[in-house]
Image (cartoon, rainbow, N blue to C red; front, side, top):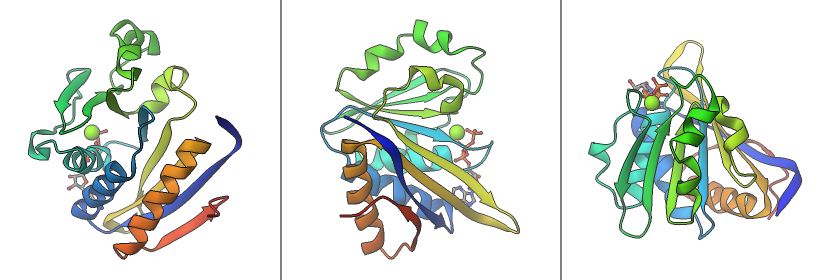
Length: 180
Ligand SMILES: Nc1ncnc2c1ncn2[C@@H]1O[C@H](COP(=O)(O)OP(=O)(O)OP(=O)(O)O)[C@@H](O)[C@H]1O
Ligand SMILES: [Mg+2]
């Protein structure tokens, strides 16, 4: 079910390895709902580093995960769910991704990670999780990650993920409406 206000939290990652670790823990917190991970952030912001961790959490050999900038989609088989890694960077119009069969990935069998998701915002289901990556000025290895959900199921996933991050020593900042 869609909820009116977004729920979100924010944390910092001090290295690519920490970013991947955060992705791994998100994969472990994902439930049965078909999940679209909508990734935003400039070139080199850390989106692919994060997806590598998601892949590892799904049982995919994460060394195989590369930015799919020159092809639209990379598909990987996990132990239970499959992962599709999409990159909308070169897309002029979201209809290109629609024509490429985006909806076929929303059948519940896939975790769908979309880089440059802002370019295909109209195709994303309401229950997607949004992950925005940005650099911290003066700190080349630091990335700020803002996670946001707009559905009850998404909020539950964010809560589980936040707790897993806290347990692993990540300092959570700027939580809103994430009680529980
Ligand atoms: N804390 C960090 N988290 C993630 N990557 C980091 C971090 N610190 C430095 N980096 C470096 O930033 C780069 C991130 O590259 P990555 O391919 O993940 O970016 P991207 O957002 O997918 O970019 P693109 O839009 O070009 O696909 C890598 O070279 C990585 O080593
Ligand atoms: Mg990338």
